[in-house]
Amino acid sequence: MRVAHLSSITLPLTVSDNMKAVSSIVYLLLFAINASTSVRVKRGLSIEEQNKFLDALNADRQAIGENMGITFEILTYNKGLELKAENFRCDGPSQQFGIVPLKVNQDMKEVMDSDMLSRQFFNPKNTKIGCSKEKTCSHTFELQGKTAEFWGACSFGPLLGYHFDDSNTPEKNGMPSYEKYGELLGVGQYSAWTSEEAEAKSGKPKNPKPYSEWVAEEATVDSKGSPTGSSRRFISLTLFLVSIIAFYF
Image (tube, rainbow, N blue to C red; front, top):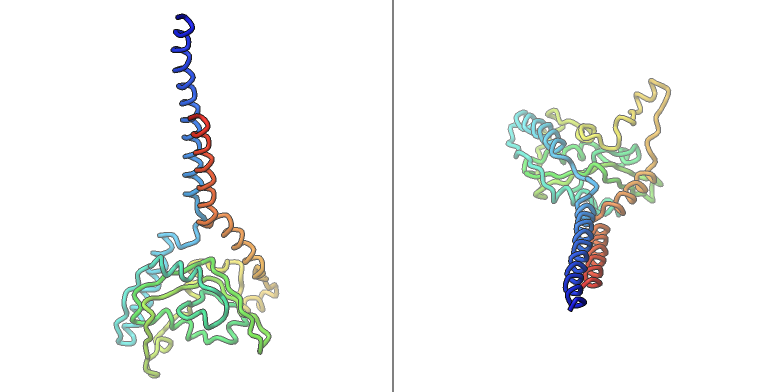
C-alpha cells in the first residue's frame, strides 16, 4: 500500500515536471520562430520616403501639367509595382519595358536619350508608381563593347502610352531630369558620386563602388532575408518542436 501510495504521488510529479520542461521549450521555440519569420531585410521605400518622393514628383507633374495645359493624374504608391521594379530580370533592353532607372553610368547615358527616360515620370495617364532603391542592373552592348549599368528603378501603372505634340512636350515646359528623383531617394549613394564637371574642377575624381560589389552585397542580403530562407527555418524549427513533444508523450 505504501508503494502504491508513493507511485501515485511520484507519477503526477514526473508528468508535471515534463510538462513544465516541454512548455518552456515550446515557448522558446515559438519565440525563435517568430523572430525568424518576422525579421526581413527592408528593401522597399519607407513610408517617409514614399511620401517625400510622391510629394516632389506630384508637385512637378502638376506644375508641368499647368504649363502644358494638360491634366496630370495624381500618383499613388503601389507595393506591387515596387516588387516589379525590384525583381525584373536584367537580360537586356527588351526586358526593361515599363521600368525606368533612377541613376545610370556614363556608358548608358551615351546610348539612352535622357529626355525619354525623364519623360516616363510625366505620363499624364499614370496613376501608380513603385520604386526600388537597391535594384542594380548591367547589360553589355556587344556591338559597342560598352556596359550600361543603372541603380534604382521605378515602375509605373497603368502601362498606357501618351503622345505629346512636338510643340508641347514636358521637356519644353520645365521637365526635371529623372536623376532628381534618384538623388532625392539617395539611390546609388549619390553623396559618394560626383559629376564629371565637379571632378574636373576638383581634380580628385571619386570612383563609384564597382558593380560587382553591389551584386555581391545584394546576393548576401537576398540569401539572409529572403522569404524562402525564413520558410525553411520555420519548417525546421517546427519539426524540432514536434519531435520533442512526441518524445515526452
